[in-house]
Amino acid sequence: MKSLLAALLTALLALGAQADELLREVIASSDRTPAFTARDAWRHPYETLTFFGIRADSTVIELSPGGGWYTEILAPYLRDKGQLILAADDPQSTKPESVKSLERLQAKLAASPQRYDKVVLSVFAPPAKLDYATPGSADLVLTFRNVHNWMVDGDAGVRGVFESAYRSLKKGGVFGVVEHRLPTDRAQDATSSTGYVHQDYVIRIAKEAGFQLSAQSEINANPKDTADHIGGVWALPPTYVNKDVDRDRYQAIGESDRMTLKFVKP
Image 1 (cartoon, one colour):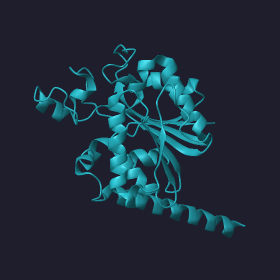
Image 2 (cartoon, helix red, strand yellow):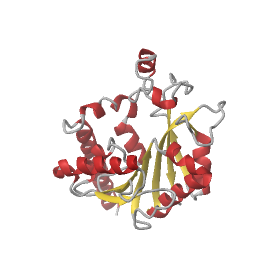
Image 3 (tube, helix red, strand yellow):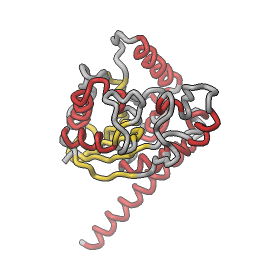
Image 4 (spheres, helix red, strand yellow):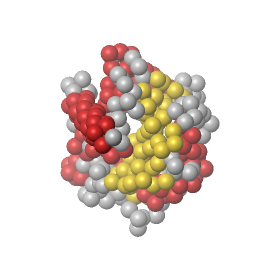
């Protein structure tokens, strides 16, 4: 019995090592967009994804993939053994920017079928359309720098998104959140017009949705970010909303200070 358990443990450790090596290879791949890889120093994709517990055979939902920064990593990593579901913009949206964003994402996927042919696109349009995956089907639901966008619909809107993640996850599944962090001594704008959010707020809403906080990490922390910039978080790279005004100062700060939170569906 002991020899069987030892063999099983060895096999599991070997699988984990292989998965980690695959993730490193994907992140280091020249297939990624150069402007995206330039952000690795701030976004720490390997450390972030391993913190959330990703495996090559995971079923992963990415909420609001945007331009596909993380999609470029997740899709090839999960292609052979796992599944990536992109909860993306609604093609029937009345917002031109949402339709254009989806079209750009679809073009990106179509241009590299060898990487994206197994990606599943679904509709994510809070607060109305939140049935983007079969309930209880996902190992991980991940969202990167999106919570502030959902605050326009108030606490109920954010809670609705978090509850949809809860429904989509298997028991024991992980909801991983990375978000721009507002200092605790700064008043929270109800609609997060600056892009920054209190960490305690995210934790509270997640708990109200049924999650348990499993772990929190400072992987994506940036103590240089004072979170009080004209133009909000978008003053910082890579957006530089203020263009050349104080650009050197913002470049020296780098990307935003971010919370990295791991929630579990009990």
